[in-house]
Image (cartoon, rainbow, N blue to C red):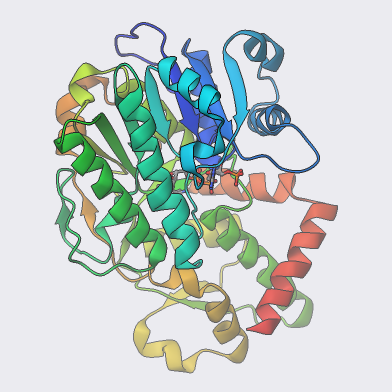
Length: 393
Ligand SMILES: NC(=O)c1ccc[n+]([C@@H]2O[C@H](COP(=O)([O-])OP(=O)(O)OC[C@H]3O[C@@H](n4cnc5c(N)ncnc54)[C@H](OP(=O)(O)O)[C@@H]3O)[C@@H](O)[C@H]2O)c1
């Protein structure tokens, strides 16, 4: 957690969506440790209460988290669904929540990059509309909206925080849905219905201290698939050369989950941040060739290399199959925009913490986390499924 170095204000009553997700879990912990009271809207699942879901996630991230202390006083879990009218809450519960909320943090989203448009529309766009409505009825009308740096779609060059151009192409339905959702927030704020604070993280990666990541997360998935394929290859041959198509000089923007969470916690307490949009991104993004170096060292796989577009035709059948199995990420391997942070720097000034950048140490930490945490039965099951997926493409 970032030390909240900026003028911690009065503890707030926060209504948070998406608290069981990768970022949401870390954010929930930071908000509670910063003295806020949180009502978390959580999707119900069979076989456990919504409160149990939160507890499992918080303790998975931080085994020492004093759950009993917070759950008695500062944390309420309520069952709901952002895709449903009024979040699926009864009229009386909805009205009570609205009246008792100081700030809404809308973080829930469908993060599957290429899932069906109906789900993306219902959850990402519809869910944001409902969060706007909810916030508009609260006493302070304050909404923190978690967007994405990738609302910039396929734009290249410098992207400013104040800009949201809907004209560029999008790599997938997820990007498009997040851009439309952010635009809804902008319009609601421009019309005076709400006051908003929008954050746009880049690719969120493991915790800067523990390497903690969620198994459904994209970077986790990629590393996990590489671990599986490395094992498969090593069991069959001594020639471990393996190529992944991608432009070695392209940059990729990664940001640790605890950094994003700490910045959201800091920004929501900063008056000058309201009404603005911020890129929560790495100011010096890593080149793919460096990332490859760190990953292959962490995986102890010296023959893992990027190959340029011109060499795609020469891929072996196995390389081709692997490439197809990670096709949803491929569009991110060639180029990306540079996410300007002038607004973030101007608002936070000296209070802007320095982020832990991708380095050999951070990549080692994440790979170790994946290897240790998911060793044993769980790994065997996931590996079988990754292998099956690989064989079916
Ligand atoms: N991860 C990244 O690299 C990244 C980068 C930029 C921006 N973002 C944004 O950051 C936010 C958090 O991302 P994440 O990676 O933490 O996502 P995540 O791990 O996929 O978690 C998504 C959260 O949203 C909840 N959710 C989804 N649909 C819902 C619904 N219909 N009703 C209620 N809750 C619902 C999920 O609940 P369940 O547990 O019930 O599924 C989960 O708590 C999202 O807005 C995402 O677009 C993420």
